[in-house]
Image (tube, rainbow, N blue to C red; front, side):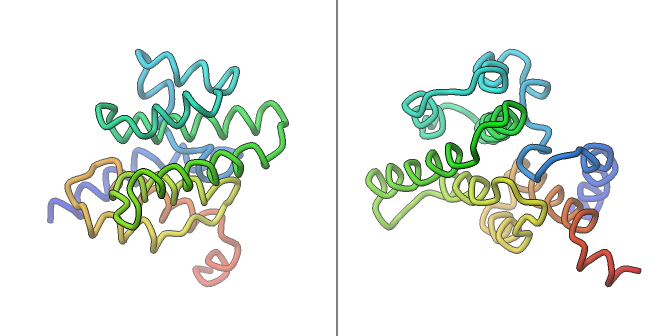
Length: 168
């Protein structure tokens, strides 16, 4: 019952954000507005971020998952607003995958897998809802994963043309 109530509240509070004119990761409300004291998020949105700083931030176990999601979201905002090529984001994603594989081998921790899944949804209006649900199933205590899952589900309902036709 609590999970349904939490899902309802998330849906209610995120519905306005879902109408943002941009892809899924761009629209996630985890950026500098959610974490105003995290200056790296605002700087990333305005100026981008070099890869070594990006990797260090994402692989730092002392930084909470929501802030890491915020960094990914702000990085996509930077690339979208500055009309830079998507290839930079894809390049960061590939480098991160290699770093994570090198550091953890085949036993990649849940949070790192989650971040890579988010990066894989770069520049899409059809996030992989099933993937985010599996993360919530693995770690139902993570509010960040729950929020992203609900947001992805709602985002998909609103923007996925095939699903719109089914609902109508």
